Length: 344
Image (cartoon, rainbow, N blue to C red; front, top):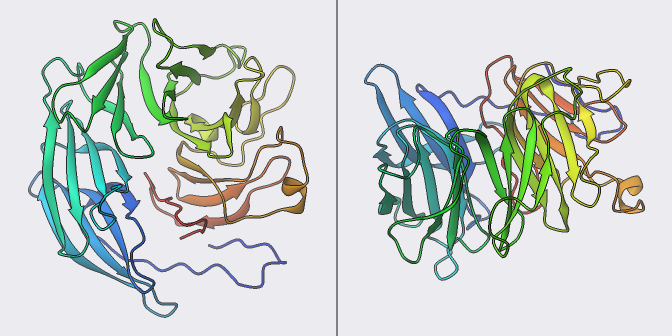
């Protein structure tokens, strides 16, 4: 099934590229060539109980695009979160950070020219997190990685030091974190259970500087924030997607009231669930340009791309129905990655 606005001159095309393992996460690699792209996959082979990281070469074609395996390494356990950052000195060797279910974070250097994944270093499991690492994110220049877990710990890893970590916060289990995203070189946002969001500033010790509490739904719903995104030109606002098709924006200038784009209703407002299952990934859509968006104030929420557990890829815009919706009819964990201002 493919849904496309009647005004669109090009119908949506879906090309299926079957993989014979579970795909836990995927990311586009930095763009080096006009004719080929590279993809990073976190996979799990249930027949051999083997988790791995793989790089593949993607050859685009409107008729028959193809994927060619390039490199593969075995991971210590299944990957829970995957991030990539361009290397400031060598663009052909981006930095890969992989969080593992066993509680560690592993860093690799991906050589896109020679087709290899080389281990840089790993953060040992002991003392890092109690249980799986729920989410990680690399900052813009790839110098620091922030990690969060259901144990309520928030940690920072310096990639230049290549050893150890710094504990930012430990809730001792009172708060469980599920996702994280950098907002600036010194600020990041964490997603918590109960649709809660916490804004952190490393210049201010002791805890988050702004809280979006988990009771904003008035007890009508509770859930998990699976994904967060922050637009580079509007760093005061973050998007959050999670359980039961919920997608909302949180502006720290007005921290007590979210802008709900899909999902639960607030107060007397009815629920507006454009997607019925969990939203696993969300990103601002830099491809969709609207005159209403361009000419509006900064308080209007920019279009957002989402993927959901029931196989929906689509764009949600404030005050409008689901756009460019594509039903894949299969489970999706992470199927969105935008680069170079375009949709892939």
